[in-house]
Image (tube, rainbow, N blue to C red):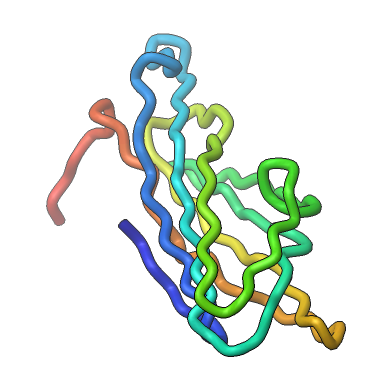
Length: 131
């Protein structure tokens, strides 16, 4: 579990390797990740945009910018929690990392970025080394 708080918005991410959807012999690995967004502050906010940077084990990366999450732009009042599950897309390596941010908007129209904690994408096919 990975967690970060930005301006009283707590983002928690739990990734899970999907062995049944991956094909290591074809260099195709995929993960699901569950996200929990909790508004611990005193103002109502709406999630407007998401930004992801997905990097595989050899340093290739993909950036994703899109409206909302899972087809929604949730409104979070003080104390509200929004949860969703999504997928990483296929990576050609057995490990990687994801990180990003959400653009939030207050009722007054102010926008600010909420950091999504960087989280590790690990599979059982990853070679482990101790240095």
